Image (cartoon, rainbow, N blue to C red; front, side, top):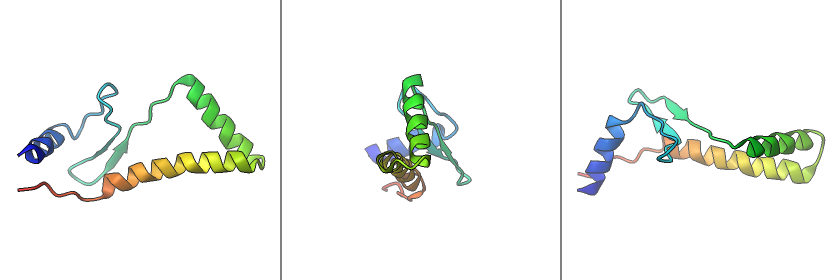
Length: 87
């Protein structure tokens, strides 16, 4: 069954993050969560600029940064949601 193959691969690569395969979050066998964030320099500048604009009171920047943080929270939530393997 394909879900068993995916789970076996998941177990064998728990300790790896691979920037080429799109793996950005892992849960270790002992329940720790690791998250890899990759940014281009322009993206960092934009994210930091948005953050500081929001801290200076820009409501639009606050909403934009909040939307980005919401996406990160969704990633973390998906990491800790149990999906037991089939079979």
